[in-house]
Image (tube, rainbow, N blue to C red; front, side):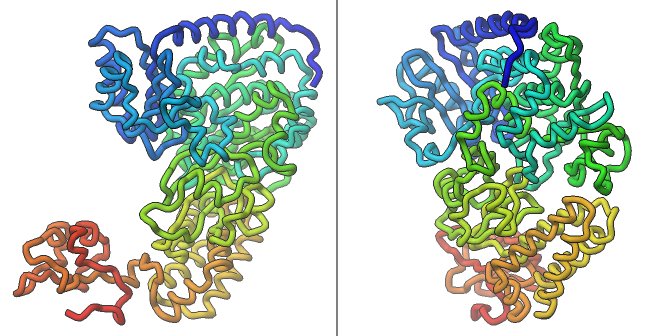
Length: 635
């Protein structure tokens, strides 16, 4: 990429950068700093109380020790997370922190020399004192690029982002021809991280070359997949990376305005994006004559109302226009006639966060990670039956086994791995035989799954694959806009068949009918929601057909998950007469003692909620979940 000359923009940004770096040096100069993770995951675990405890203790002791809020560093399983950086020590990450531990860390580590290793997750640098994150198995696979700032900078302070190299790419861009920026992104091979994996540079080129002066760039932050929280975490932890990517994209395609379409259910992300937009405008990184150049660009924040279908580009555009969020047929493509009928580029949050890094570091740097056809890294939200839930960023081509068992530390409670649902509700369920599959766009498609936006839900031996398929189909059927017949009626009919299966009804020929119907819905639906809705069915039929057959032929759920095919029983020889834990826990009063004080469950009243099983003390282990009636224990 050829930079034209030392521009006014570069000179203007140089002054901004010097001030930001000075602010950053002042924050870290020869004093301890406490960073508390206050993204949504941290807040849910009690981070606000921990933050206040640190501030109160520091104020009480009159210490020169900044206490700042940062975002999510990915280790959501250990929230609330705190990082303490103290001169003479490596930065240390603490997990499961509460207000009592916070006070102790101030007394013993900030004021003394005891780093309290019993609360340490790991040090952020190699050292001889404490275990380092570099020593963990997951460190061999993680490569944080777009998550690098998350959990390490204050997302409400633009100076933190700039001091780490932020907005350098924008200054460089403004001294470069727009078409050269497009070519650079094309050469990088960056593929859209929203799910489809379409080459980003080609999309930009189509939009730039489309006739008309008015064009738009939209950031799709309408993350609606169950179990997915990647985009939310980036917007909460490093919003300027997305804003900078949008400005560069706007310059490259010739847009004057950009929209961030974000779901209203993400209040913290909305708040931090609003702050970031105001800060960028104040420093003339956004608005008219950006950094003294002739380029004008503004970003408008638009709150979506939570419709999953609005993650589809044309439905999203219709929503912004004030119309019902329903997809329209293509062609014309969005790049030819999108928002308000004008050429439009829609990119995902993660896609835009990559742009400044590619412009700043170059194509060779980016293609040095990942695979030939899927360069770069992939960000996943690990959820479900996995020890270390949270965010992970790994090079494309990393295997599912490495992600689940080395990064995520495997399945909890000694259970066996059964499957992984990848790609959200429209993705596929892959079995143990697929664990050594490299994760990239093309490899996943070959086995019936999709990359999706990055949700990864791990399932264990207690999960029923028929019920999992039914659960995800129920979600997509409920979220269908109803515009096209295949999606509106096809998903409804498939759901009815699956409901029958989970109740032990149906016939073997229904499996073939279900498979045929899934293929027709996939082929005939108008948009990506309907086209991918059958994926959980098709993959579970492909890899777990025996479970479907057991539900129909035997009337049993092998995983003991389907409520209509299970029952709870109390074992007389194990029931402790003096214990009434199950009686008190039953919400429908279906449990009562007999004459010998042995508790009995009235199966006609039991709603099979499982609270009695959870309430039974482990030393008795008197309640079991079985498939009736053949396995009913003798009374």
